Amino acid sequence: MTNTINIEDIKLNDSERQPCEIWTRVMGYHRPVSEFNKGKKSEYYSRKCFVEEKAVMHLSLEGSCNCELAAAE
Image 1 (cartoon, rainbow, N blue to C red):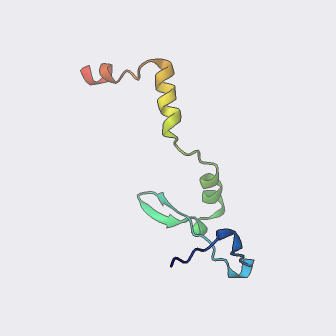
Image 2 (tube, rainbow, N blue to C red):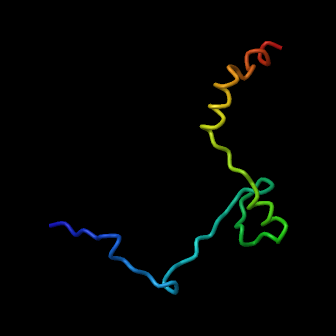
């Protein structure tokens, strides 16, 4: 006998939800974003995340990253 829960049957009120705390690395240590001042929060939300697929695509379009030349010097 297996008990199966259908996710769509679960309904939560906003009062039952728990807020998610976001942490990030700043100046060598981790801090919750909720403790940032207004300026640091603005900077955090304007950051762009690194996407590996875009970097690989960029290198394949250029043909080479010149890593061999830097290693030879």
